Length: 72
Ligand SMILES: [Zn+2]
Image (cartoon, rainbow, N blue to C red; front, side):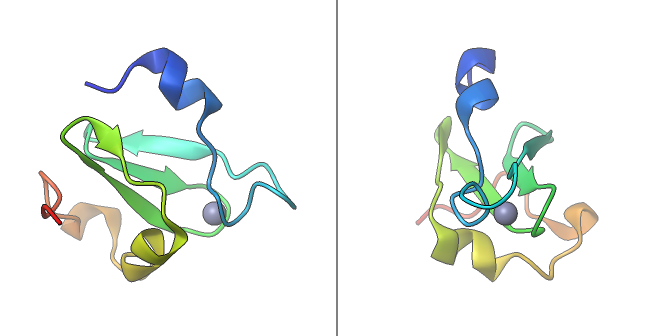
């Protein structure tokens, strides 16, 4: 599990400068940006907050996200 405290401070690195970039936790495995739809995988309890990584999943519907996310 990712700690609640960490989740509360994490923001989408793509959006945070201009918007809120709030992230929604999906099945304890993904963080979904509420502004741009990028989806950041949580691998080994560590959120991978890379814009390029989030970009890969931007068009994937939440229901089709692999759980657990693919390891690097
Ligand atoms: Zn975003």
